[in-house]
Figure 1 (cartoon, rainbow, N blue to C red):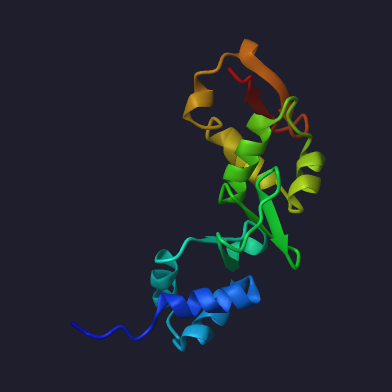
Figure 2: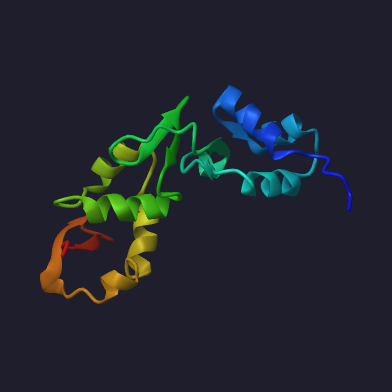
Length: 154
């Protein structure tokens, strides 16, 4: 068996020092030109990608200090304990008492949310929401056009 050339610990040390990094910065830290090597090493660590900046940034779970909404930022780069922007929108809206207007959700998340909300609407807002009747809906989020219905909590 070949000896390991690149080590996950090197990535972890780099991220602990810099808090967040792009794939190019992580490749340089490992001394490789191959992104797949970095992705394999990130799999060994508890890491996450930003939901802002098109997922361009990475951090370690141990570094992120999520607030009550499950959000954390560093240098205007935003991360969510829920992962993707779509999933974060879904969770925040479903856990809210009255839903969010699109602008309100954008103010909370610091990014545009119209596309993720459209995606949730097209997908039926998840399997459990597909079984919800109109009488069980609370105030919809978004504008009048493309609003996403949100079921009441049980």
